[in-house]
Image 1 (cartoon, each protein chain N blue to C red):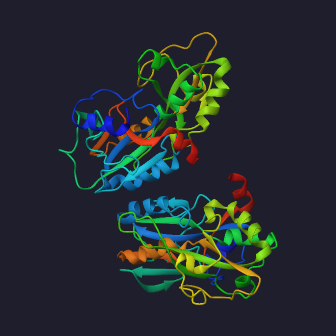
Image 2: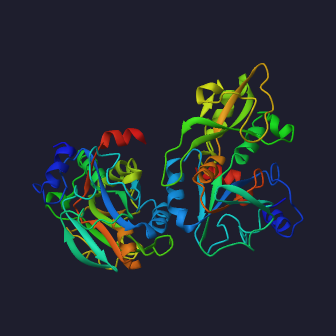
Image 3: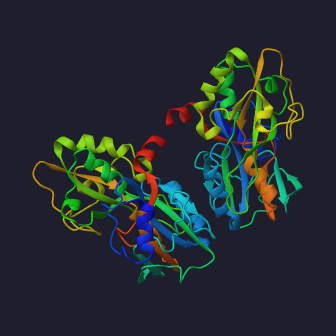
Length: 257
Length: 257
């Protein structure tokens, strides 16, 4: 399905579920919406932490249409939004045009869904996709670089990969620097402060079998976690797995690097 | 002279002139100081226009010391500052700690002084340095990408280079992406909207001789010009040629790319 059709279906309420595996050949993005008062600190935070917070696009106050998605509207074209007040989830909504304020700034941040489709094409099995689960995510002992009110641990996603394919998986993802790029860590979870790998902080654990190595990539939940920890008065994000799908082909993205 | 000694001499009023050719092996930077209210728009402007506005470091409100210059103070370690109110130059000062406000944010932006010392080492003659003049700068017809209140033309610096050395000069500067990088344009000035190359908008024209080609690089005056055009209430910059000198060696910078 072309992303413009998918976005139309999301907007009119026909598509209401996650976007994993949908319009697979196109770049998908995380969304963070903040009042302009916090936009400078947040933008600086993303610049200082490019592995976990790779900025694809900023829609400043007054803008709703992405340059990467023709006739899109960031307020209606994501299947599910989360609304946070003072650092607590207070609402889940299918559209946010009814609670939009004039000073809202939107940040589109690279998402590992983009490199996952390339991993699958490269013959790397991804169990969480095979089992239709959410990827396992963990808070680590790797600190982010603070900017203003935003700080906290780097969050990583973990995928178990057959030992013989670890190097290939690292190589493929290194081609996607704006989608978190090469792994932050390969192997023993304790080395990055993960005490019990079977209990992720977010998402689902899908096991690590004999002959598999856990691989860890920086995760777009990092900036969201930092914003929650800061307890800012109002923030809107996409719901996990419910992404903004652009018209930007993965292949075009690869060529642009 | 080591930059720490130079900065100490600037701070105590011993060194009061420009920094061209001083501590040549170290990275020098442009400075723009703005109230935090404008910091988001400005940071976004620099991200959207990386060739002319390559950000080296942002010192958010409350910070005066650069990570690239030990025990530095951005308010006293530049030989001359320009103060602008509502887009007009209203004061020139040797230190700005007496007019500093709590909400000021400082931006350090890459400067072509850094690649100039490498050009000279590479055997490229630079006439404005030989004649102890300021480099010639021009407003062009190349628009910047607008962000909030900041917009305007790309400003370029021009250096006449012997025809046989043009490719070498382009190659050397391409190694310095955070110092404006490869040229924006080589040859006929009219192709980028410069009507009379003998009359620069800023700096000094040093002639273009037979057998020389004018080469144009994006210039750090671009963000300053955009901020002036926006007419924001209060802004402080370095005075042209009076740069912030870091402890960061050109060689270390080159290795980090």
